[in-house]
Length: 77
Image (cartoon, rainbow, N blue to C red):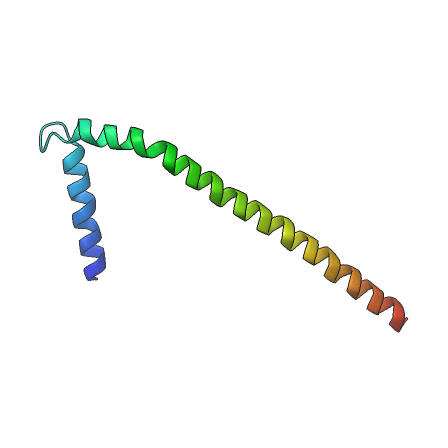
């Protein structure tokens, strides 16, 4: 319950900080977002590559397992 309240407080603070009249942090937030977006894009791309490689590896392992099971079934028959 405390985590929910803390989360709501931080969300409310973030919204208030972005509003033009309250803290006037709007320009600073946009500057931060402009600077952080290439880094975030790089990290998202890197994670996507890792997920893609893991998916290819899993598919290869699944094909090997299916081939082994087919060989076992052929030997039984």
